[in-house]
Amino acid sequence: MGTASETTRASRRRHLGVVVAIASICALFVSSGAIAASPVRAAGHAVRPHGFSLLLAADRGQGSNSLNWVSCLPTTCFAVGWGLVGNFERTLIEQRRAHGWAVLPSPNVASGENLLQGVDCKSVTFCMAVGWHRTTSGFQPVIERWNGAGWALLPNPATQGPANAFNAVSCASTTMCVAVGRGFGTPNRTLVAMWNGRAWTVAHTPNPTSADDVLSAISCPTTTACTAVGTDGNGSVEHTLVLQWRGAGWTIAPSRDHGSSPGYLNGVSCLSATSCRAVGQYKQGVYLTLIEAWNGHTWAIQPSPNVNAATLNNLSDVACTSSNSCVAVGSSSTGSMRNLVERWNGHTWTIGPVPNAPGGDNSLSAISCVSATSCTSSGVLSTSPDMLDRTFVLVGH
Image (cartoon, rainbow, N blue to C red; front, top):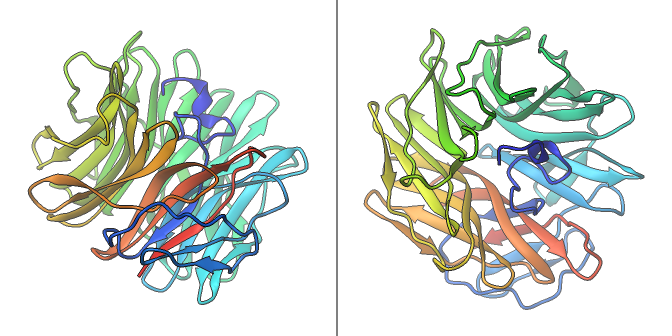
């Protein structure tokens, strides 16, 4: 975190160096273990051990593929990322349909690298996806809109500087969306753009220090309440960063760190202007899970478990459907990377059982829930020995 590597091939959330596929978990805490069968590359093939189905999703091209974000409606989901075509990563958008996940046609800017980092859907005829494409001078945003029939590029807002990238987007309505990311410079600055139903415009945002800042995630439960989270470089030590919108401008909301330990916020979910959960990690020798709660007045750290406090633990995203139902996803290292799921019941966070795809490192990186028992989580399978990144779907039943 806090470096330009967040907008490289490995995507904004993969500070651990892993890339994304897709996992769908409809019953997150059904008793399960690691899936022992080897994956089959034919899309639509399913393996059903221990109450879960492993469905391999479609890929774009024969190289690595990554789905970086997911947004679900009751009847469908959209996931976005990139697929390696020739020598360049190109936009990848998949939709969950009645008989599995299908790759949709998606546009690109010019002929070089194009990556989609975030997506949010308000209806089956309205979604926004954001990311970036490489230019001769750095990076510039990519914005695409779904109208129910296809995806189309939208004009970029008038950003400043040679390089800008969006990491996430949240829409409170079809006429109010917010995209967040980073404007690259010396130092890097927070970047926020807002959609009014007709065009995107860059908003003025504060930066807490003169060091590098980045926004990694955004949640807008209403048109006058948005919360963005990320990291403030602050010289040699990173600190958690929260910006809030209450209809009349962006302000810094003091967040919490574990003492002097570096802290990072990767994901956020808000039910209202007075109820949010943000997740990430802090470094105390190794990376440990970090969860913070907003009550309308202050941010407070909530105790969160780790698979093993002597190894790496990370939370990448969180989704809340009520004040007593949230699910956070991420990864932990026990020799290899394994999926990590934690659930909030209104009182405590606990680690829940979750399967792992065989054949390589696993990591969950984003989550979307349409109810307390129906969630879809994007994840990772970095296979070995071919070292390719593949998409897959895990369905709980």
